[in-house]
Amino acid sequence: MKRSAINAIIEDGRRAIDRFGFALPPFADWSPQEFGRRRERIGPILSARLGWDVTDFGSGEFRRTGLLLFTLRNGAPPAAGGSPRPPYCEKAMIVRRGQSCPMHKHAWKTEDIINRAGAVLAVELFGSGPDGAPASDAEVAVLADGRERRLGAGGRIRLYPGESVTLTPGIWHAFQAELGDVLVGEVSTVNDDLADNIFLDAVPRFPEIEEDEPPFRLLVGDYDTLGPRSAP
Image (cartoon, rainbow, N blue to C red; front, side, top):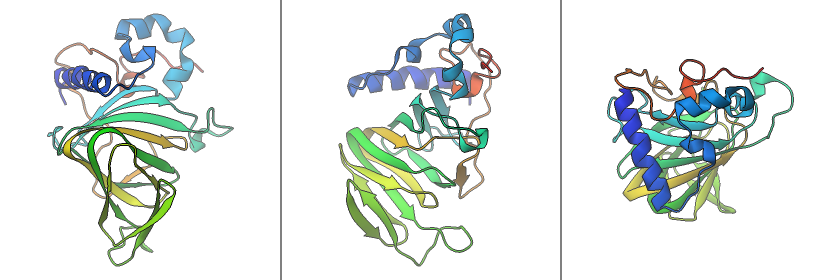
């Protein structure tokens, strides 16, 4: 992805988040220079990879397959050892009308996917078969706002504003915004996008970036390259 496209996506997404009435923390609006000035005092932001995240999953067509995310809070992944701080994660996502996130599952993360505001979020679901692949001949059971829902393989649960679904490790899922844009929330156990995502197709979680202009905001993937050093 071109940096100029990423910059435009963040600016446009920031306006959409504001329109939906969702407030982000102050560091959402820090420039790269501000991150640099504060780098010795913001180790938890850097090590937990809090902040902006843009991906097209290698599709080259962000408005069809892609996500804009902002991680508000997160603990240490299991691979880091020790006690996570905190033991949960929260993200906000803007999913544009017709835009989708590819089919994937998580090895250890349990998450609630929440329609915070906007149109309809359609979540497609499969269970895992003995080989770990999506089970094409078995029901999948999930909790949706405290009620058990059972769907056939590939069934879709449609979330309207305020509704949510709980996805446990091993449940394959993809989602798409229908009828309009959606502000999606994710509340989960600790998130590790570097190790915990298992995609049905071999797609990259983070894009390769063509630096055609300076970054407007740092991405979490920039912290080790363009941005400040992580605190020990």
